[in-house]
Length: 191
Image 1 (cartoon, rainbow, N blue to C red):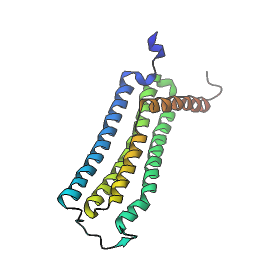
Image 2 (cartoon, rainbow, N blue to C red):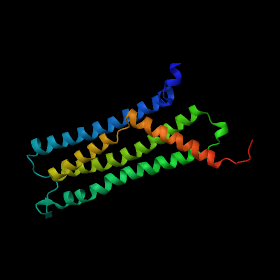
Image 3 (cartoon, rainbow, N blue to C red):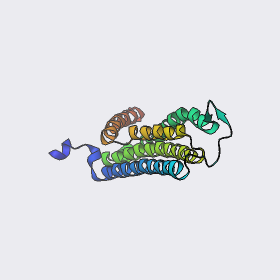
Image 4 (cartoon, rainbow, N blue to C red):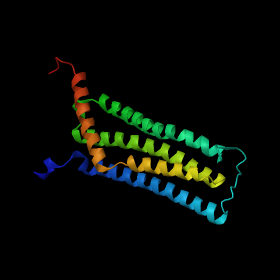
């Protein structure tokens, strides 16, 4: 009787996929935070705040590269989320095309989790890459503004983390949409 009250994502295979997604996402967050802290220690303790690359061009007292990175940051954060949503939608549309008469609900659960995690991995890859670029620039030009941008990226990653409740609510909405789209696509006169 408890099996009927269990959420489909609590089954073994979907649960393992979500655990893997959370582990990789947490690893990306920790590596980015660790790299930034490490670069900060080198910049302020080993180099005494002297930029490795030099800051020949400044805008309002900030290095030009830091200002450009700050200007690009909102687009990078929003773009990462949009790329993730597009990837998730693409994977979801592939599930809709599968023949419902040959697919079990358990297989749909695994496919929906795969679509969810594919979208999150796409987001995290974009965010992590941009955050690492900002951390490296911080190491090279010693602009604290860049460390702040890395913190913004890290906060976005924490907010977009594949939490269990988020995955379950997305799954429930996705399963409802999947059933509706399959019902709408099935021929009316079919027996």
